[in-house]
Length: 208
Image 1 (cartoon, rainbow, N blue to C red):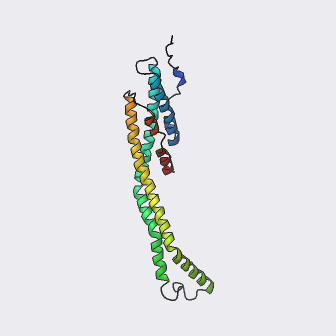
Image 2: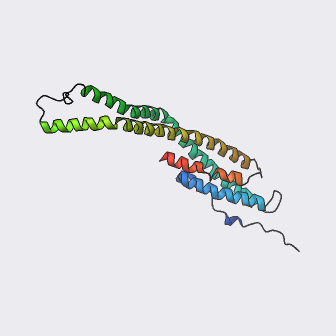
């Protein structure tokens, strides 16, 4: 004869997370742990069975963590949104440096006298250094231009991706929060993937 399942002791669950003192990685990890515990609780203790208080406490814990995680994510979205214009301006300025420098060097080097941009009494040694530097910059102008352009694109793209991924994650976290708050038992591994996916690694990288 099977014995009735004994509800776990409420003391087994940790206290609610003091999320105001944690950063994004810590809150994400806390949310993963509490959500995993909630999914396990829902599967082991269906609605109407013993252990209602345990279910409620598990739900309260994961709701607090989800709320904190969404708050941190929204802060990240606002942060990236506020610097979008600066990123675009910085990217444009960075990609324009080498073309402007190349144009200046070409204007200085016009004619047979590559050092005529310098004073007439410039000693031979500095003149040679100037000519060598001018020649080197002319040879490397195109590779440097491509490098700066690629860097400026990545600089802007990283901020844009963090903004859009963070916005999407915030919306999905809100949906999960409301689902658990309304007592839904349709919570599974797919929902757990929401707080463990690669997006969080990217958001943390983009924030650095």
